[in-house]
Length: 204
Image (cartoon, rainbow, N blue to C red; front, top):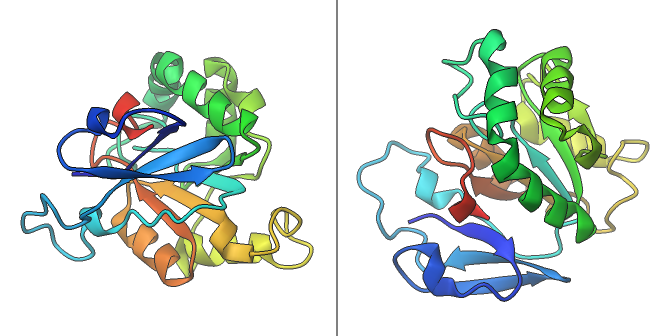
């Protein structure tokens, strides 16, 4: 059982098994399972089912690229397929990303892929206009994406002006549970994309 985020007013019963509560974010809402451990079956730590930390007040959402916006995780992704995958998935992603942006949430991307690859894929898929936040390629650092997000929230960083609450106003959406675990330890809100296949309708 995974947490989900979606438009306000969607019934919790559409979220799969288990009960859900809706966490209101202005005109947008995020639904989370009431038992984050339900359905966990021996996943090595950190467990994917533990990585959904949503408590409201999100002003910026940073998406991973490979395996989150695209279908294939980064360890199996090839550059020549990334543009095709994102273009194929654009009809699914575009309405949801637009709703997030229209709700006042700044969208960005942070990925180990090159910035050139990401920008080319966004343009080909017609999604580039939705990402008004930072689009960072080669996002590799000693402290992972959590450290890079923290830098963005410091004075002078591209996210510093968005939230008086700093890191807790940022959401990281990623398929890499280790990145999510590090982010959660910093107080960044997190949402685990599926292990394979990228974000789906039921995640929104």
